[in-house]
Amino acid sequence: MAELCVGSVLVTGANRGIGLGLVHHFLRMPKPPQWIFATCRDPKGQRAQDLQNLASKHPNLVIIALEVANPVSIKAAAAKVGEHLGGSGLNLLINNAGMVKPKMLEAETLEDMTDTYTTNTVGPMLMGQAFLPLLKKAAQGSPGSGLSCSKAAIVNMSSIGGSITSCFGWEMMPVASYRCSKAALNMLSKCQSLAYKEHGILCVALHPGWVQTDMGSSAGHTPPVTVDDSVQGMLKVLSSLSEKDTGAFLDWEGKVVPW
Image (cartoon, rainbow, N blue to C red; front, side, top):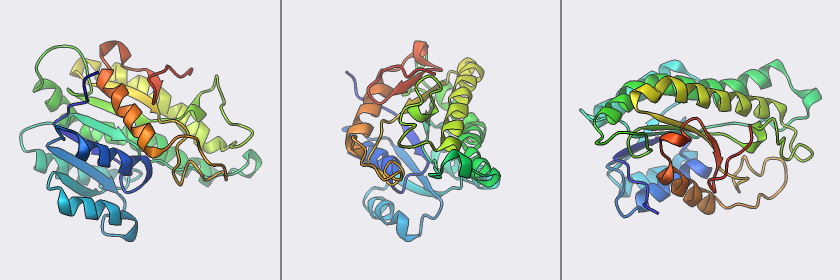
């Protein structure tokens, strides 16, 4: 299978976990992207040390401050990315930043639900809006017809926890606010696929597996999937996507996840 080949990619929440894993894999590609934009809340902080170390060795890696719950921060980040890209567009937007508050349903609050929904659902919507001009530019500048992640795509990092049909892991991790936000993110992904198809932009929701990250381990259980395996699998899936897959909800092995 052909390896994913993109000129430019932006990953949110890139300072740790799956986001950082994605950055590592993009840098290690035989033909790495010309630009890798890695965003996080505090690029100069201790939690972004690994990213800083990578950026010092790789001139194609640009770290950008971004708070996905803040429209002003998103617009500023889009402007900076546009400056770096010059006349070219952004091929791949990966909305990876997310949050979970491990609480039982009876302990959920208005604040919990609002914060989680704002980060996990509204953030990716605002990112899609802000980066739409750059994604459209990439699609227009790519040869051939049809849709692909090499041309222009939005990938929303979802979760099987947002599957209403499955309700996977309820006994271990009820996390209602997280589940609701991801179910809503799935619908957003479908809406984006319908709205942006005419612009040549592919949109999918992707379940990375239950991964060994701080978030994945927050319920006190050790997840079965490593960051490396998850990221390798997802990039393989992304390389194979075409027009027929836009609007789909898939997992890191390419299987369709039930809504």
